[in-house]
Length: 522
Image (tube, rainbow, N blue to C red; front, top):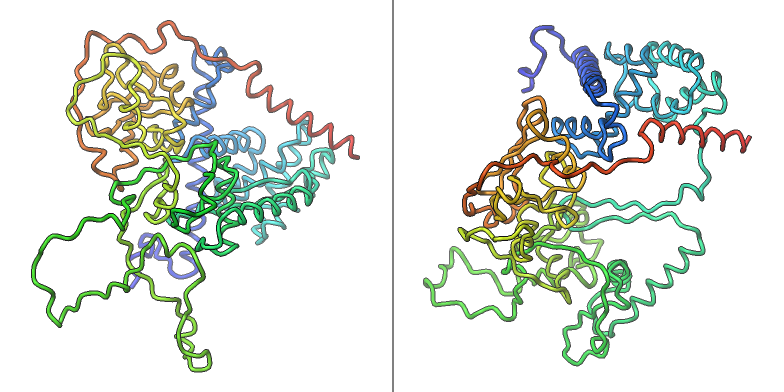
């Protein structure tokens, strides 16, 4: 069934085709990496590039933004790949040649660059490059640990103080947040001092005990919900018993942080307050029986309490299939919501987030005329952030709540209207302002919020509002933009914030400090 996917020109099939395709994939990746390094080299060669090295958004940032737009990845991911590309071609040319032949993967050259980063002596660096290139040409299969050990052994032979040493457990303490796609849940993994961990564990128990006995959640669920209460600055949990005279509800929690959720009005509506259904067609025939009232449990209530039993049968009477089959689910009737930033959120969890929250209605401006001042009103700003959800630069995922609201056509020539406003993070706002113009980044905006960016090389990138999939009503066209006069240059009267030191100086200082620490530790 997959015969048509075989590489016809080469005639290779089976494992030979797999091997050849993998080598071609590696070689193509090497060309991509080389092109990225070439873009930065070209930027450094332009007139006036030296003066931009101390710009807050310097030559490297400008190229990283272009790479991010071309690959549709975030600025951080693009910057990381650009660092690897430049270091590979400047510091490890022989390893880069092996990569260009397709003999190794991008993950391998990334490991070489990162674990050889502290080698500064030119002779030692050339020796390391030659030794690693020879080892990688051998084509021996290595695990990640074996590869790291091979690189570390080679580094130790040419420059013992440059080995990336394993940090102590204390230096490795961290908190990692992993958002699960589409489920509305996330995993928080923390590595703490044991004293801090025990104190936090006791705090979770204290929060779990702030509700009344009628709360439907298990203790484990209340402890999990306590993380959100602590994060919001509340001093207790909201009780979910639903009783008007609940003793735990007499002193509602105080909140200190903000989490933005975009949801439709029908999702947040109280099911008990739903209007009576109007008379409709006759009841369905016996061939299409109506669902029983209890066959569709309230999705909000289904979030709490004990897990339902897999079966009413005794375990000994279950077949293997029945024993391994989870309880039957049901289709969601609640319209999904979204976090500010675009993450999908099931409707039931949006309802939970709305408990005790401030709900701000979002009003589509329709064909309303523009506002007669530079800064948009709160009503218009709320609409722009809800419509866009994220920074509108290609590949950027900064939540709209953390962005600037930018005029596509600069004020006062461009109006303060929905068709001329978009969310742009401060990083890409500076890029547009100081790296724009005739030979830089420029953009135009359509009435439905679509923004078309044009890169310095003339390539176009289209970004659509983040709400278009879940809330298409927010992307309905608004009043068309009419300009007044000729827009002035973006940088008129403005100056780019500057760094105290260049990026190269910062890197050299980090390498020097880490080598000194290695020498001190012996």
